[in-house]
Image (tube, rainbow, N blue to C red; front, side):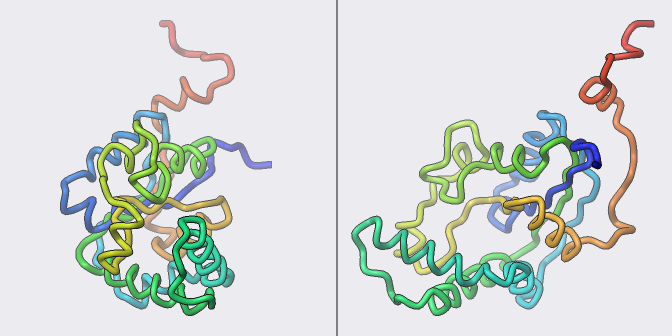
Length: 201
């Protein structure tokens, strides 16, 4: 079994995060916890690339539609449709418009439990209900109700892979093998070394 310290996850600073000059803040949150940045690039994705990203999981459209319908009903609202796929087609159109609006910064972070750690630091999908101390909770005031009213995607600064399997698919979609760096960070001796050897002279 591979050591957990080699787990990787994809993070994308979305156009709103780039425009608000929060790239460095996002990076520092993940660096401070001990994760290692192994790939980074700035691109303006095409609509086709964004659509392919969200549909890497063949169940994404159905699951997203079902969750959206449930969200409407939980708030006592009538969903625009009872067909999950129809709902998600609208969601996907908004996501494509959002993520192609300007440059994004795609990154791969590596370290123990990278997927869960990044998700924890990033916060929930809706900034309004994200915890204080998370990126979305600290830097965004958007909400589902406001994005629904404006007929757009919720602006939440960062995309972070939802599972190890999702991360593996997304990393391959955004990066080639040659763009991912393999190197040693000095701090890894403290974070992962079993006996903390080499601290004292």
